[in-house]
Length: 101
Length: 494
View 1 (spheres, rainbow over the protein chains, first blue to last red):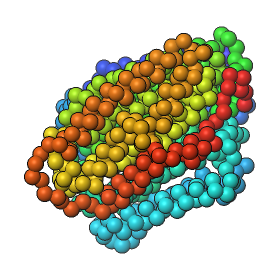
View 2 (view 1 turned 90 degrees about the vertical axis):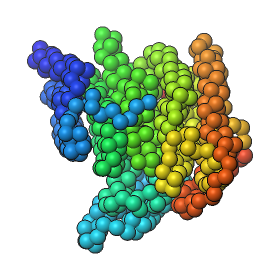
View 3 (view 1 turned 45 degrees about the vertical axis):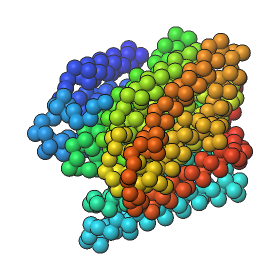
View 4 (view 1 turned 30 degrees about the horizontal axis):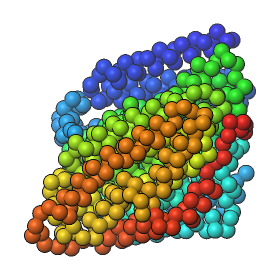
């Protein structure tokens, strides 16, 4: 039973690593958004896995809230990207440089 | 169980109902304009909420700061304190938008989003459960992403929103990961039980507990603008509509501090670890980098954005020394309240300047003292209060913060250096605040006076009375801060 938990956690840590890699390397806004989503889902996997070994349903509740909120967040993010695409015909964040210090 | 008349529930009811009704009214009236109609409704809702919080304090229905509760939210003085600070900023934003939004369309959605974001911020301060905290955090963040990008035709507004969104989404992902680790370690999402669980943790699990606290600091630090996580902040503050910048700088930043005090500071006390040094180093770096970068700016919004980073550093001094000095958290809360009014007023003054003159470059501000005398005076008072000039309210909170650093010197050998760094940074910040003042009053020659928006004048008068009044007679505010500050000491257990 405990070894199963370790498996879930390892997958979750791997997903976290993939997400951080994506954020650090990619310069396409949609890919970066995917990377953030991967991190959120890694955390959800963690929460559900821990919740399975606990005698109450708090973990599952948390995961449901987190999934719903992540969906709302992605909706806002994609709408911002659509507005940006209309202006620049591009979603590469290297091209967004009207603000510089 | 919470009473149905408890402050957070009533605030949700008032602001939520009005916030959801505003777009519905706008659809039913089949028209886009009449900005002032929606502004008045939103303003009334915020004033009623403010009045309710004040009434609850006056009737002494609010318990002193509890910090832990079996429920998901608790009706305590700590939350009430933050609710007042955030409602003041939301009122500033609404009143400031009165003129600013006249030129832009769909005002109903704009005010509705401000109200919904305000509920989120208030609930962050009230929540005592990690699930509730996360939901409130997102309720605060998601409307502000849209508000920052509200000027759809403006490329810099959109770019500001994209940057803010990316870092905001990353911060909430990190917070969820931190919650997942703490849930796995302690089997609970209640903050009190999590901290209790941490105090009885198997020593081999300690690195994981540290990792979760570190993730909380990183996640909240993105919103607070602490130094390794501050890159988005100047761009977003510069590109966003200035009214929304006021909301971000003065209110969402404070929600980050409320969450940090609820979780990290108490976790730090219980884990009995040397987080104080890490927070102290972050505080000094945040202050210094913020102030040094602010000196080099040419755009006034960007300069105040860096000054806002620097102020996060001052507030963090109090959190860093909190386990060793009772003044630490008091100073932080005091500075939070003052900073909300000062930064809110400063950005609303910029809103007035942008609305009437459409300039943000500092060289173009010359002669502002003659062109817009009341706005310029309000801005100068807010800037001097930010610098901590004695007769103004900002002085007392800085004094309390630096005093707490000296107070903690018996336990922490490096604590006095925090006070020294703070004083040096205040002196440095006076350089650029003074530069703006010189531009406004002592340069330029024959500018004519222009009509100032009345709503901006109202905000300037309120903020000036607040800053000068509580600067000359600070006792009521200090009493309130003392009442709202949670008492923590090294032996405290939930």
